Image (cartoon, rainbow, N blue to C red; front, side, top):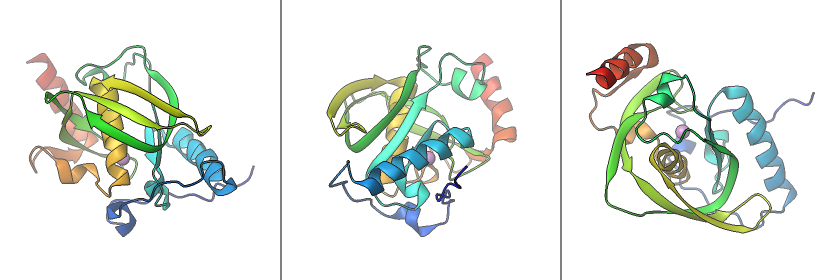
Length: 188
Ligand code: NI
């Protein structure tokens, strides 16, 4: 098997703070190669979303999927989790607009911030327009956890990583310390 040329940039890498450029030709070989290798990395990493700057490419591309109803408490405890999930979706040059002013607060993780979770407030619902990986325009709306994933990934394209959006500096820490708190908050 060919080795994946991509590696994940970790928090502190300056590339994660830079603004990505629009993709001018979604059909170019370099863009199609990038998407293919990002899919492999996402598949191997156990994450649910990945943006191009996280693999050292400053292009407005991200991909994500929402797992079906899951036993993983990280997702099950998230407000408005859609039990149907969303299959892997690649978005090129996405535009994400909030639909309503309501927000939801929940814990997030990131492949560039391994082992850590932070609490972030996000818009409850968003409208998305983008090109898909075939270069066709698509648009859809998303709510709850799905909307959260989209806002998290889109932030990467603007050089924003979730720890800069914490509800409070104390609402950030190692997964093994945070998970018991999440469970406690849910049951109380
Ligand atoms: Ni991330």
